[in-house]
Length: 95
Image (cartoon, one colour):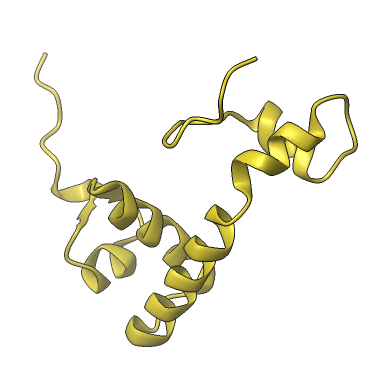
C-alpha cells in the first residue's frame, strides 16, 4: 500500500469515485478530504472579490494554489486575475 501523496494529479477515474460507490471509493475520498473544502473556500472568496462565476473561480483558485498560470480562452476570466493568460495572447506556433 502507498501512503496518500501530498501533491498529485488525479484523473477522472478517481474523481468519479467521489460520486459512485466503487471498490476504491474510500481511497478516493481520502485523497480529497480537506482539499476540496479549502479549494472551494478560496474559489468562492475569489469569486466574491472579482465578480467571477464560482465555476471560473475554481480554475483560478487551483492555478493559484499550484502556483501556475491559468491559460483560458475566456477573456473576461483572463482580465480578472493577474495569473491568467488569455489564449489569444499566446504566439501561434510557426511552421
